[in-house]
Image 1 (spheres, rainbow over the protein chains, first blue to last red):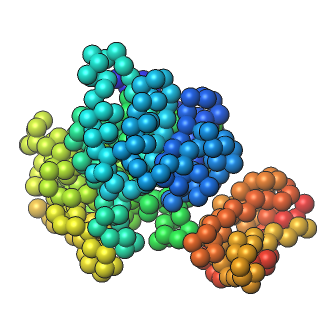
Image 2 (cartoon, rainbow over the protein chains, first blue to last red):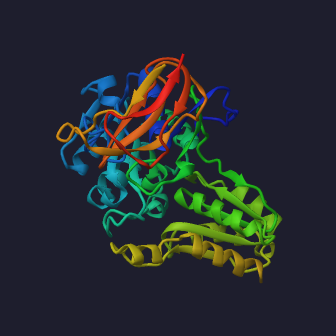
Image 3 (cartoon, rainbow over the protein chains, first blue to last red):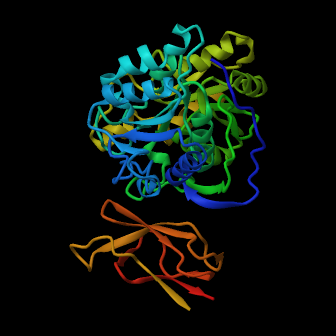
Length: 348
Length: 78
């Protein structure tokens, strides 16, 4: 795969406060204004505005020929988007929940992700799959998964995961402009939705213009010297909260928001672990065969001697996500488990 | 002085209560006309509140406190 965009200066000149969902919509709106080949399709993306407000207001702005409500037929409409992309459009197609990937994985993986390589690089598939991920609000085992490890495991797709308004806007713009298929995964808990658990970090200043966030570049969101926490999405917020708590006890935590899983910014991880010697990976996806193991291997493949203690992995255990709130909270990588893991790691 | 009221999101129940979910501006800030001031919510329906005029905004209710539709939530001094 090729990367078409290069890093840009990320300092906003003038900005305004937005929630993550509104920032994402603003990014889509700017690109739809700029490029008539961009369309947005999916279930309830029109009049409803997306069940997690990913398309609020876009139907009024662009009309039903560019904001397209689809039937409940993921195989059909993801195939439709792939065909449109191959023919030169830049569709954004929403998979309402990442959990639903399993009903349309043939289109996603055997077609969208493979066409470029199968054509010997002659055909590009410039499309974005947007999808909601994550738990914490009792939506049950089939509506609460993150599954980014599954997408990232399959070659041929970029995978981006914004955690805040700034990255949500910058990454959706980069994703739309990218000539590769990009899976854009937004956690419902970072969107700033009024009916979800209140999250102050889901509202922030974003630049008014079309500033991009480069795909494949992690962000050190908190600098520290004692331990590195590598994480993504809503877990970034939890890790930052824990880092503040631990600072009072003299534990100096560096927090890395990966932002992209594919491509993965291994250099930033290695630089940080080289400095701190301690690594904790926090991942709201299943523990085994996933992101947390990949991050650990990123370090041990290069130099296990960097580590002064074993890598700690805080992830969902390999079990379906419970509906019951206390049980769900018990398996999610929440603040209590993150804090315990960091304390254990730095004490070794 | 211009009052900014909680918009009517529930047509079935005009006396419905909602909350200001998010203030996008701070008390005493200068705002432009049409600038997004707040997101409000009644049950699971959310709505946006733009500034009717430019001026200095004064917030009359805190986030997450119950407000009846139509009640003033901010004041803008021109």
